Length: 154
Image 1 (cartoon, rainbow, N blue to C red):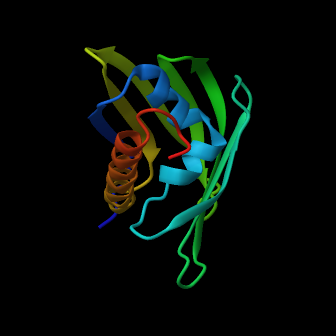
Image 2: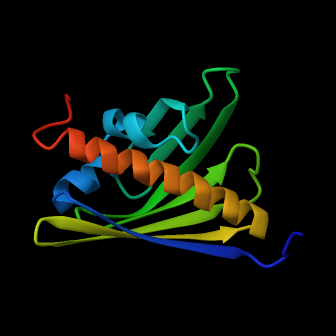
């Protein structure tokens, strides 16, 4: 059943990598294509980043088996490397339902914690779907960071 109130999703995840690398994973087009795909087996053929306040982010994820796509576009509101990113997030299938993603990065003893707040999600169902998607993305990022300790070319 849908809830008419906007939903908030908070995820806190710690990665065994320095803050600069984790921040770069969120802001490099090449690196985003390697981990930001919210379904197992999907790919991310489009990752566009104009990293400045007012700049645009565009992500398109695709199921290679049937070419189904899920895309979103946003605008950066805060860019504070390597501590904070805030951007809008508008799914292609819900252009009238803008969301907000706030990311806070903190490093301790070589590990980086990311606190993500995804707000203005329109329904409980969408929030749970996005939670599952972000969990897959963060699992992908964890694997990528482990495999590429010395550089992204791995």
